[in-house]
Image 1 (cartoon, rainbow, N blue to C red):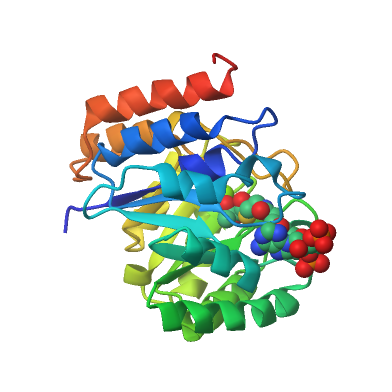
Image 2: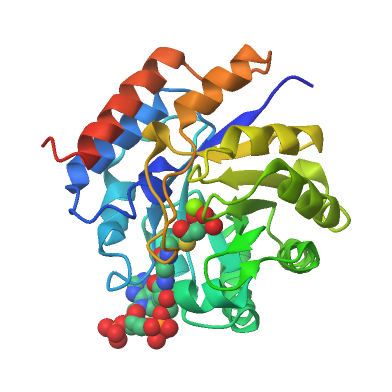
Length: 285
Ligand code: HMG
Ligand code: MG
């Protein structure tokens, strides 16, 4: 198999960390450009508390105003039932719940323990199933947590198994603070693969330590074929001190295609989207 999918998360994970509010029409223009690049899935919205993440407050408008391309699934984060209802009203094609493998980050990001977050996800899963939309599951801090230190692989495996059993169609494994190295990724994946097959896993690497490509390589070796990335290398997480951007989509694309993998993406459109993304975040209105 020579195909790898890049799941574009720039409009959500990339932009959520920007302090200056980016006008809705500029977010929409970025998504519309990305829609022409050949992605199958683009995360464009996050229905979280606007007090916690003000940049995502216009998520409903973004979803309503984009020009939807055939065959593209437009995704949104939904931490609870309130978020799910807003995502459904704005016609998200799929949603994602997000948990942490470490208690410290769960508390900082969701204001609750890991167990409490799973309880909140139960009605989200039920309502999504009723509405007939797929749910992806994120796990943060899969190797390292900014509050608790190294994360035991067994904790990640347990949570991955729980999210999978709850009905998540894919589990995205997040190196939230970009501290992972190929060895820690390999050890974590060996544990997770006992619970969830590689075909239902994705790698989500922030590039703080410059190891994202090496971590993708380590994940490919274990059979993972989906990687999250943000065009222009934007982003970070507002509740993970020191986290920098996601690995840049155009970099992952170049690297993968150079190694003989097919992504189905258009290089020129990606370059255009990367320029747009960088302009958005450098104040060039
Ligand atoms: P809370 O304060 O514990 O919840 O926050 P609450 O239920 O008590 O609600 C507090 C207020 O938020 C209330 O409003 C609610 O109505 C409102 P108030 O009465 O104060 O005016 N509220 C909402 N508003 C809009 N949409 C909602 C919603 N829910 C409650 N869905 C909560 C709990 C989960 C809401 C909060 O902790 C939160 O919003 N956290 C989100 C943090 C976040 O977005 N982090 C970044 C995304 S995760 C990430 O980036 C990691 C990832 O990329 C993977 C990786 O890299 O590791 C996915
Ligand atoms: Mg992230």
